[in-house]
Image 1 (cartoon, helix red, strand yellow):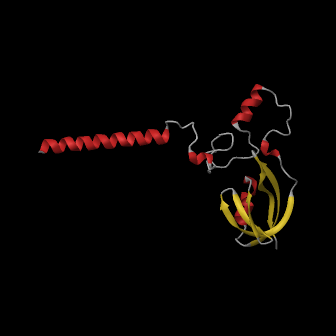
Image 2: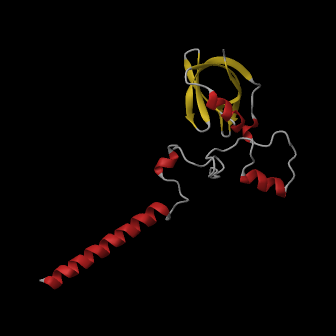
Length: 167
């Protein structure tokens, strides 16, 4: 009877190993270039529209930084329009406003309430030091620009250009 039990244990271990390998292959590699049902519905992903990975050091894509596609194309063929390189260059003139700074959402965006409506503003690195000195619920005067997102012309990102506490 012991031999039968050892056979069963070996078969169970081999089956578990085979199952783990098949699940890993299915999830990680096989057919990865074909979209699954979830991707067609639109999910948050750590890649931008061009498929470039986010920078590891900050996790934020700089809208002024060239993507791999732009740098490869500019090396192969000269760019005819130098002042309109990327799709995110659709930028408005600076808009001034006053509101209440409620806090930092993450390392690259803050929330400001203006006229009772909260909005998220992207912050460039040069304003990080100013933001860190602001207390929560501080009255602020700020300027920002609206930038269109590539492929989503109706969606605008709000980018701070200046912020200061109102005294």
